[in-house]
Amino acid sequence: MGAALYDRFPVFAEAFDEVCTHLDPHLEHPLRQIVFNHNPQQTELLNHTTYAQAGLFALHIALVRLLASAGIHPDTVIGHSIGEIAAAHTAGIFNLPDACHLVATRATLMGQLPTNGTMATIAATPDELHHHLTATNGQVTIAALNTPTHTVISGPTPLVQQISTTWAEQGRKTHTLTVSHAFHSPQMDPILQPFTHAISHLTYHPPTIPLISNLTGQPANHEITTPHYWAQHIRQPVHFHPAITHTAPHTHTYLEIGPDPTLTTATQHTLHHHNHPTPHLTTTLTHKQPE
Image (cartoon, rainbow, N blue to C red):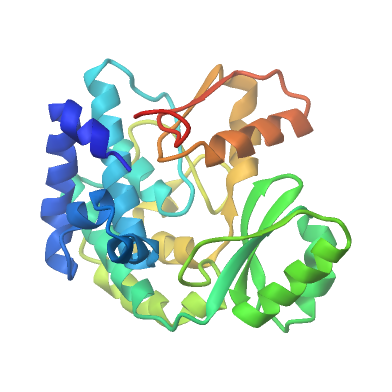
């Protein structure tokens, strides 16, 4: 995940190392060692939220710096969960040390929670899922609106598996995510107050370019410069497809910053569902070809 870019492009390596300098004091193992190592035990650590979030953030920032060195700058940014912190840094809301502090605090607090939850994508709308979610008495909730017809749910593992199995038996496509916790669900509630307190001293700036909020799918307002926003960002659903729908009428190119074209695929499905003209969609990295 970025190892070949690290070896080839000094600007990428410098940015990745700069992020690691800020994150490593909060981690048990050096981040670069975990992200670039092929040892199976190290790979398993990368699936844990503490290192997954830190690793993704380092990759995001290094890719943004590499693209900027080639003269490629975004007109608007959209994040997806941890990606919104990288988007916020890119938009000037946080300087890098503060963004890294937020990421490290978020990742370590989440990593300390019990690992008894999971997440799953189901080919169903929130309305279709409403009955099954209500039956869990609020234990399973919507975690992300990825496309108009695909929704991510999150909660205790047995309940999420039960709902997924029910929909699979009806012929709907389901997929259990490789995650260590039930993000964007009530299982995050215990860390909201300590997280808010831990990031209360950070310096927040208004965005210098438009950022489309995960909480609303609309351009971020002044709330994004408050600790409360970033606490709710942990708990509330990611409004990804509403963000794409909002930007679609005036966007000609979408570029995904990440290790694989997951959001590019979600963007394609969203645009097709709404019969929007398809813009140029591309991703920085894909496992199907060399970096």
